[in-house]
Length: 354
Image (cartoon, rainbow, N blue to C red):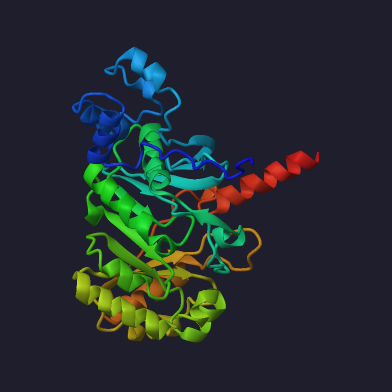
């Protein structure tokens, strides 16, 4: 009888700690000290295959040629005038994810995806309109950081989980990636932000890990009614429950929460709604990030006027709410989450039809 069960893919080297890499090296009959060498070449030199590790014996490297390191291939890339670099990365199964490098004179921030697509279905989000495939593995998250680092030839200093996907639907791999990025690559946890639209029971779950990363909660509305219109999952996870979990998170971790608020012209950007938002989060150890909407195809929302953004900000500050406006980078590169991937797929389909 033929066994038709598909063989499980080999676990890649990327995503393993130095201890795990040392155990693997010794299992291959190599001396223990080569584990530290492998770790250094993997996380600090950014190798894509074992052939690149010139300190290893050539014969052994040839024997291990089929070893899966776990790096992706660059499928497409765009760099804007402000030097923002947006990449589409092709994973081992052919899936495409986005990652973005955002440089300033003092830092390099990477916007990381946590899923292939997203199941949350937020009406103003390009990723949600593209559907959902699967969670990303630890090595696929870490690879995004290494790829941006090598393409921009700068060390990554900050990290935001604000790319494709809902990070709290992938908590195990999210936490594993954060710990590895901190311990093995050297990115401080306080320089890492995890953005979530809110998933019931997951904020308390994340709190139990006592990470030093910042939790950014996407509100986008000051009332349950409007939030439900914009974010379908709000029906089963009302804003009152979400904020209760946020308060518990602050108490457990001692970390301030950041509230993300995308301003949509004529929808949630009025002075009255700014007042409602200020009252909603009163008493919180928090900060509000206002994000002027970045228009996407297949959505009717519009970017608010600069005067409306400033008025909204001024109203929050007048009510003693810590708030700021996030400067949008890379608009000409389809900067919205999932936008470049969606645009590229549409162009590919159109090309196939011609």
